[in-house]
Image 1 (cartoon, rainbow, N blue to C red):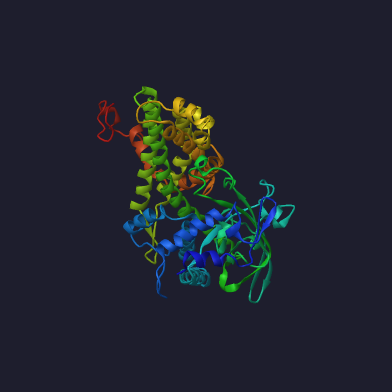
Image 2 (tube, rainbow, N blue to C red; image 1 turned 90 degrees about the vertical axis):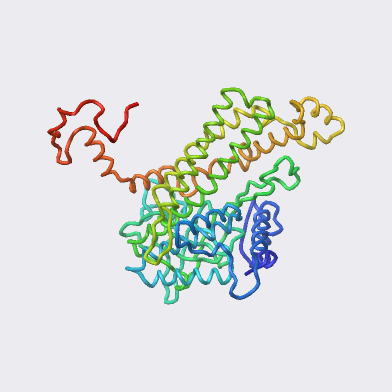
Length: 481
C-alpha cells in the first residue's frame, strides 16, 4: 500500500495537465487542483498498512447483501478518487462476468487488472462521456470521426485510440483512466466499441481541468465546506494513445459495446444514492438549524417544508436499502445491487433535489446571499454592528447565525452548490437514463394482471362470469378508503 506522501509523489509523473489557461507541472502545488490531491492523500494514510499482502478496503468484492451494505457505508467516508476506484473496479468485474461466456479473454484481463490495481494501490476514474458532436448523428456519421473515442490503429501488441472524454471527476489526481463506450454501438461502428485502462501519464493524454475551488486568497470561513472539499473536472484528450493488449477489455465487439456503460451505471448510481442519503439528511439538518436560529421552527409552513424534506430523505434511504436487500448475484458469487431500486432511488433523489434546495433557501431567507463575511465580524469598526443586528435571541449570536448562512450558501448556492446541483442530475447519466432502466426492470405483466382483475377481465380478454354477482367492495385485495 502507498502512504499519503508516496501517493502525492506518484502524481509527479510527467502527466500533462492544464487549468485556467496555463499548464500545471505539479498538481500538488496548483491552488485550483491540489485540494483534492491532499484529501486523497489523507485517505491513503487513514488506511495504510505495511506488508506486501496488505490492501485497502476499497479493493473489496461483496458476496452478500450484508457485505454490500457494509461496503457502501464505508464509501460514505472516502475521498472521491477512492470511491471512483471501488466503483470502477466493481464495474469491470460486473462487465467481465457478463462477457465471460462469449469473450473469456477480456474477462480474464479484467480480473487481472483488478488484482494489479489492488497490488499497486492505485486510484482510477471512469471515462465514459464522449464529446458527441451533433447529438442527432451517430458516431460513424459525425463530420469529425474523432468526436467519439475510437480505435485508429490496430497493432500486434495493442491498439491506438483517439478522441476525448468529458466530465471526468478527479482525473488530474488519479493514476489511470478506464475508457469505455458511452452507449451501444451499431454495425459499422466497431472502432468505437473500445474499453481499456490508460495511465494518466501516457504519451498523448492531455487533461484540461475545471475547478470550483475558491481562490486561495479568499477567507475559508466564507467557504466553510468547499474550501475543504475540492473536486476537479477533467476534459481528457486522447491524442493517438497506445494501449497494450493486456489493458484492452473490448476492441470492436459490438455485442458488448453497452456492457460497460450498463455495469458502470449500476455501481455509480448506487454509490450516488448512498451519498444522497447523507446529502438529504444534511439539507434537513441545515433547514432545522436555520429555522431555529431565526425563531421560525414552529411556523406551520416551515414545519411543512421540513416534513417534505424529511420524506424526501427517507424515501431515498428506503430505496437504497431495498437495492441492497434485493441483491442479485453473478455466477462467480459476487453481489450486485438490484437495478430497479437503484435507479428508482437515483431518479427520485435527482428529480426532487432542486425542490429541496428551494425549501432550504425559502426557510433560511435572503441572508444566505447577503450576510457579510466573518472578516467583517472580526473588524473592530463593523463587528459591533453585526453582533447587534445579526443575533436573534439568547443562544443565537451573530457568529453562529452568520456561519449557518455561509454554510448554506457555500453548500447550495455558490460554486460548489452549482456544481452539486448539476452533478446530482447528471452523475451516472441524466434522469431519462434512470427511468429507462426502471421501466425495463418493472414487472409490467404483474401490473397488467392486477388491472385486469380489478376490471373483471380474464387474461384472455373475457369478462369474468362471476362479475355480476359480486357486490361492491368484495375484492379482498383492495381496501376501501
